[in-house]
Image (cartoon, rainbow, N blue to C red; front, side, top):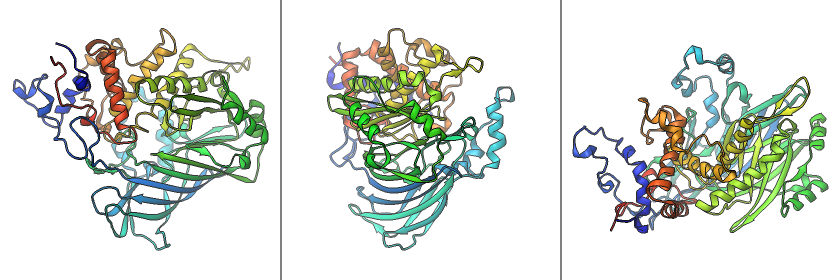
Length: 563
């Protein structure tokens, strides 16, 4: 008996097959509970959209949503004010009478559903930060203030806000193949991330009276509509992340003129926002063998002292992305290095305050390039023109072309020196690999994060493990090695990995560790590297810039073992 290449991907299903039974409660001691039952009996029927081979069908479709956005950041009041034009292309075979948008920041409203559905930790496990969060959260009434919703001719459109979702009723049905354009204007109050948490917000530096902003989920964006789910308009409760459509972005960001901005996409107007010396350094970095400082530490310190009353507008464009995020601060040091290999031609770039050195200047950009090198071996060449790592208040979060990463050195108040431990060093390298790796899953292989966390976190954690082990021999990876998950696998409070994101117990072990370890076992013990790597890469290649579902993670037209 031997493995067949044509059915290699089926073997991956061993790790996940038990989860496919979760839609039905199966009685014990019946044929249905047989763990070796053929998967063909329980997997969905192939169709013109999703085939039995696991590849997209010949009538596969997905929506296209393009955005033109103008946003202003007020550094005095910590407010965002924006307007956007959305062009929605209906590529589905269905006629749509309304369009849903996501309003992620409404999770911070006083009456948000998330505040009614979040369990409280036992009192003895509540930290000072947790207590501060509980005290401050009821005082902060955040969320979107939607001021305008109108069509392309300026006629108001009827809309309804339901929690973190906004429904826009179209004046006439949007038929298959047609597109529609509408405008939205809004504003909202930013929050201090270390107090209220979340994936966005600002960090305040008292010693120099400055702010560092990491901005995500900041604009009303289209809810995904696809063949398996229809509208994915489950409320945003905090854990289940984002399900989005691909599109092209044209974004203008107005900030104080002494700020430096990092964002999804390519900068369109460097002459308007950078000095001549900075532009020359940026050009030099494209062919550099090590990171080049675009904004030096001394320049960042000068910016910290500045208090310009004027604004500058940074203009970015991004093609074929599912989201857009940015960061802005006077405090940013900026370094960059070109990465060109195969089909990749990318600028790896890091933005960090002086507080991040000496750790960040040494490891951040190197870790970005290492991630692209390693992930591309198992998936596809990194396709975007930039890949960015930003140090700020968010501990670790991913968006197309840009990631937010947290670890910093510790300041010795007696000596004034900044030092970092081995744990902090590997913490930084690991989180950058993980978050940059998310560009592959789910920013390009566009799974439904609101529903199935394991499809991006699990696959990404598996590749993170491989990339960490390639960083250096004996790298202390937290997840991926079977020995690291044995205590969890013996516990009684497990749920299948196919559990919805909001209902998972032991989130890290279940959505990250278990699928990553299962894939590692398949690769090293069950299938072998040659067959596994071919199968995994085939999945990634087939589904890049498309939306897979769990049951199309693998082709299933054969048996794992064939003669």
